[in-house]
Length: 111
Image (cartoon, rainbow, N blue to C red; front, side, top):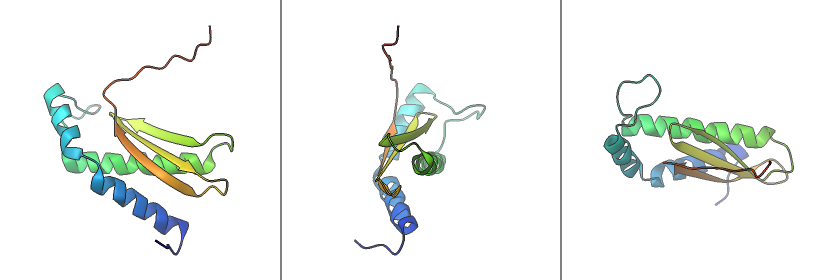
């Protein structure tokens, strides 16, 4: 598929992620765990999840475009939603990913 601009390609990728991500499964998990966001007194609706997901994706894109050249993947996460973006050497976004992270742990090994 040919795009007129990098922005058009990014918009297409964002919409593809939003259209294919299983927001229902995400919402069901949050409902089961009574998982709310911040001071919000209710579990986010599917529409609120989509808005949050788009914001995480757009943030990941901005970070990737301004990031150091040695890294390949950049991410933004909040409220269980984690968006990743990777770019080419010309700072054009080549891919996006959205995840719902229930739990994780990282050890850097620096002792």
